[in-house]
Figure 1 (cartoon, rainbow, N blue to C red):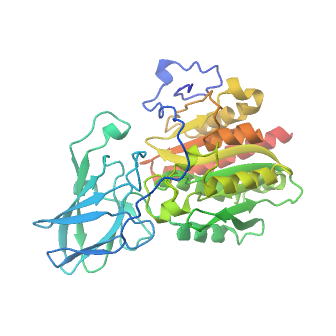
Figure 2 (spheres, rainbow, N blue to C red):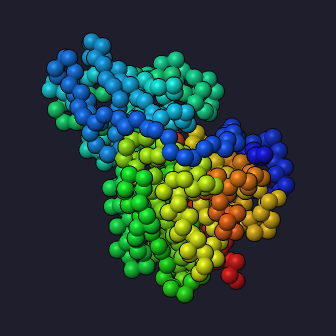
Figure 3 (spheres, rainbow, N blue to C red):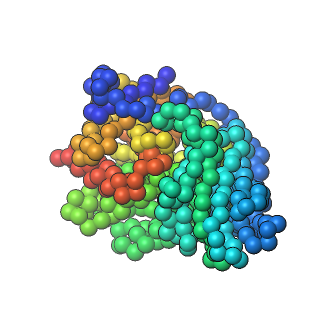
Amino acid sequence: MILLISCTTSCKKNNDSSDKEKTGYTGQAPSSVVPTVDKPIQKQWKGTWALTDSTTFFSNDFDGARLNGVAYDGNDHYTIWITAENTPINVSPWYAFKVWSTTERDITIQLTYQDSRNRYYPKISTDGKIFKSLDSISFKPINPGEGDFGIKAAPESAEITISVSENPTWVSAQELYTSTVVKTWIDSLSVKPFVKNYPVGLSKEGRTMHLMEINENEESKKALMIISRQHPPEVTGFLAMKSFIETISGDSELAVNFRKEHTVFVVPLMNPDGVDNGHWRHNMGGIDLNRDWQNFNQPETKNVRDFLREKDKDYDFVFGADFHSTWDDIYYPIDTTVTGKKGKIIFDWIDNISQRLPQKKTNVAASTNIDPTMVSRTYFYVNHDMPSIVFELGDNTSRDFLKLKGQVAAEEIMKLLLSQEE
């Protein structure tokens, strides 16, 4: 059973939030138990499409790309086709491609999908590094959806109009944070004397999974476990996690004092294969990693499981968070009817964040189901007695707010955990 509650104050009050406290998004339906043994995937062909008009070119030949077909319709109109790595699959239709032309002009591109709708609003870049949202006047939804949240609210497809020239333009569902980009960020923090990184294992396709360890006191025995990006398109969750970790690694008095008492372990990119191959959801085993925390059939989840088992001998894990993205900001904790007093810190943390960020209401969906473990949050709690949460950020939450929310979330958990030491 999953208990779904949306509230602006803590759900620790026996989950009795009133109707006036409810927000529009109540979360996703309970996750089904699914097999996690390998399933075949279809790797996309990589290369450049030279269209019959002989002037315009599309490419998916870069990490993070997703483009499965292009057709020229005449009159500077093109249709592209986006398919998933396998099915059935969560409707997270990731796309990313480059386009350029020998003739500078405006073109229109229709985005179409395999058994899905247009979930992600296009981001545009001229260098593949700095992205901004497409101007709304250049975006035309086709067959708009109904409601405020979920795939049914998304348009069936969309047309975008962009200016092309000899210099490529990148079009992407979200900003491109490939394994190379993430490793550059990890290395930038690792110049600090109290941050180190090392491999925690290899992915299905042989990519290194990097782990960051943050502390200033080798004698500290309290630990946090933070992971992100089990699902490749969920960039907003990664951005909030990035701010969260940068805040804990910062120079504030709070952060310095916290690092003297706590060690933070971070796996910023759980699914490097899925990210670099432009997957909608799965790893190279064709599996949703956040359904594999019971059977551990995939190397990515096994790597973190084995790491935690080893570290659990020396550390008391006091907090765990798995950062994701969905239709709107929402927290998925385990209900205190299950966790008791130990889990209360999660709801206190949610309350404190909400009080500091009242401009965006808090959605909370608390679960009473801890068998099977299946998802990371539940595994963390059941196997390591760790108060833990799935922390989801909206696909379209503003990037400035994501950074602020990550910062505030870090500050508030540091305060709460330090207060437990007093």
